[in-house]
Image 1: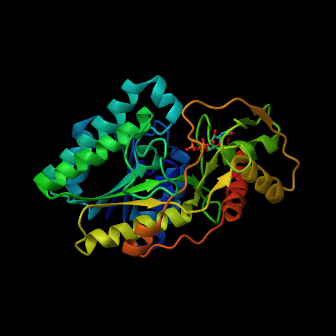
Image 2: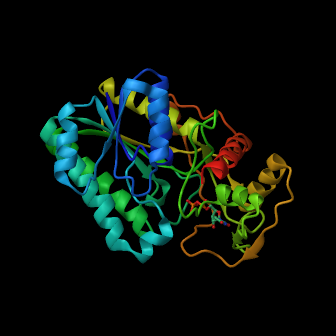
Length: 331
Ligand code: UDP
């Protein structure tokens, strides 16, 4: 059985779905603070008796200690707060939830002799890039609290390997995009802050004014450049990371991105193409904390995990759009 913390959220639920598709038993552990019961219900109807949901909180050591008595093969740890802007305004909330929550999880793993964990890390641990594409050897100087919490957790994981033999694979995501190809589940944040869902939401005309943050960056067209990695490609790296650990792999860390950069304007134009709508946007000032350009050097994941991202930005936007249309009928 695989144990997925944060499995009611965006990336965790797609990972749980793929594990179920591959025939595994999956337990999702989530406090439903940002995840959705509806998502768990969909996973349940897909996985049947192979799917188990535990409503629990990583900030309550008893919750996670009791849950891990079932001794899963491995943990895939997504549960975290993940909004960069909010993390700067409310650092206490982020340090407590992300760092203490992860520490409680690792302690419960130690206690229950669970020794493998795949961790949802982020490109935000690198901070303002001094070199693009960004490889895993790039200096780690996070410029926001969110990135700092993830780096702290990575460091704690190193110590838990040295002292207790807990092996971790840390996957450092660039910009994750898209939804399940069958639109069973998708990205569902409240409030939504991410570019692609915001662009798509603006096509439903519900008092939502799309804003583009900054036009004076030193990039191809003045807007920020990001590396958009498809959610299903991203999930496939988690399965490979589990295999890697099961085959005796040592603690390791990998960037997950496509090595291709797209500007905000290019993303907007691709959304116009996919939706066949003339999406209007207001070009405004920069958003605090946005580096000009983030692109992954993904060669390490390709080489060691044998991972190959296959989907394009357009593929991601298509599935995201299908999901957004469905979401409009749910909310
Ligand atoms: N962005 C934007 N309008 C939005 C949301 C995002 O212009 O409504 C820009 C943002 O400033 C950044 C890029 O789109 O340059 C990607 O932002 P997102 O929040 O999707 O991901 P992040 O890069 O912050 O992880």
